Length: 171
Image 1 (cartoon, rainbow, N blue to C red):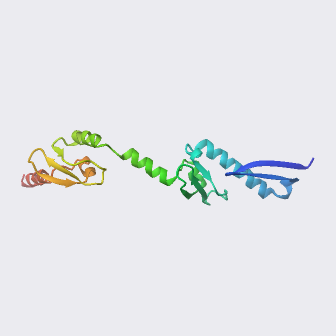
Image 2 (image 1 turned 60 degrees about the vertical axis):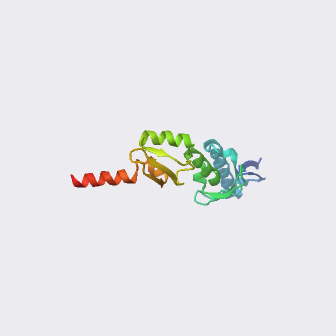
Image 3 (image 1 turned 180 degrees about the horizontal axis):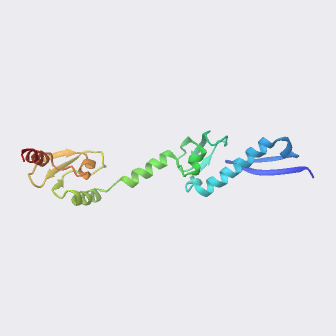
């Protein structure tokens, strides 16, 4: 029997191809369906975020971006198939995860700073690494505002720092 029935998943849709000698008459279409099926199978196996991504576009090659939609927040974006296979996630959700990972509580910031520079007292409330915070030097009482990230990179009191530079240059 020359009837060939091929069912394959192409991204988020079922494609049904039925006909006589489909493989002979339309090798390109069959190849395309098989390729889509393989890509989707690999996508669901390799991408840990696959259950949160709805593929809206069709695979047209590894360099051609595919339209995607996040099932969590509805964000629509375009991604290269290879990036999807390598774990690419919704850009909006990805940014949220990075922010959550890099966000510290006030107490966590204070503890980290005490390990790096115990001579700085924090007077303000820690918001994030880029929002200025009021500080006081425990050695000379000088108060200033600075970005928390600079304090965590071993930058301390500007007055003490200037004194160290002067002492170093006079030796």
